[in-house]
Length: 481
Image 1 (cartoon, rainbow, N blue to C red):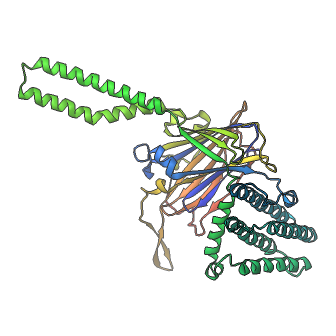
Image 2 (cartoon, rainbow, N blue to C red; image 1 turned 45 degrees about the vertical axis):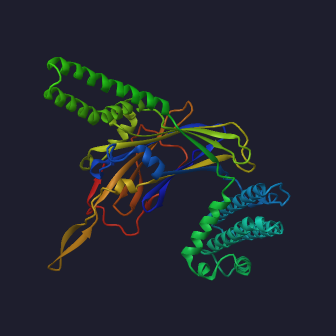
Image 3 (cartoon, rainbow, N blue to C red; image 1 turned 60 degrees about the vertical axis):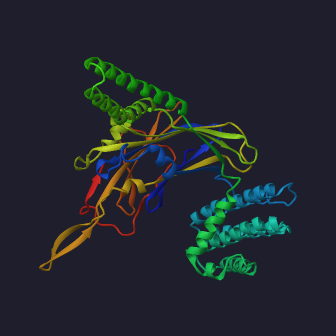
């Protein structure tokens, strides 16, 4: 039940997501093969800095089978002891409602039969309007509590309207059910206006209203998104390594000082100069020795550990170990090397390999009611990867009707990504992607074939994304790792 997916998130970021069941153990490794022409390597990109600035993750409860009828009996009540409890249970209901709507809408959209679609849409609309009415009957009178309620109510009203309009956008608008659905959409729009949830400027600007609703969605995720406790590993080992490196440097320095004193009689100017050179060399090389030794000690070790807790019960839901490091090609698994070598001969250039690994062990404990798995989403920013790319554009010439025409083409680079998934006591499975980028954006993400003897990851969700404007692939300059 991996449901593993890799897709473009923003112009220069990709999102990796997968599902984890209760009691499951899984190790995932992502190997980014970066062409050396991109200028990315251990000398230009600090792994720890990149992890905290360019890798953003979120882990939350997830249920694919959460539907509106299941949510009907779960509405928020004011009879909670504290404001924090009220907010938590309200967020839980709102989040379940939104996920249930998405799941039911997705199933409805798959129906090809028109009568079956509108029959399901009618039931879908009834469930939604009933849930909204029950939710609003529990509106708190206390002003401190009402602020949180209004945020959730605003989002659910808008989200319901958007889901219904999206379902109708490609269907017969003359159907009798369509008019009832549109009437509910108009009612919700008037409801938000009457309660002054959004200003006129926000309502009239699609970008403003969409971004505001995105913020409200994040607010109602509190309580469902798991609490994370991140710990950096190897702090004591790093101190020990630093001390050992300092001891080595001082041993060499002390040896040189003793030899220098034996070579000169008394305190002379020559001795002073030699000692100065020795101490200067120590300052130059001590950091290099320490860093080199630390890389040797740290090689292959996890960098961080993470504990995921339920925000309500504070129970531990899962434990994770995280790796992020540059590795040599001879240090990566043989199968991964075989996959990366499966390229066109003109594209085989030197590359740096950035390895991101995450090992997860989900506790065999009860999840929140209505959820049967947790979903992990990790967004990798490619901004640091493109900082050193060439800004200029090349020109491609062609003749047309006796005239020479020059067309500008961007320089593009191709990042190979190999994903390795290994479940407990099972052989590893693989997937390979090609990520084409220029300095401004991700141009395309495509899935590539694997060698015949390499197993593909089960339950892999494939997405192919591309930029709106694309040059002919035969004419574009491309550097692939």
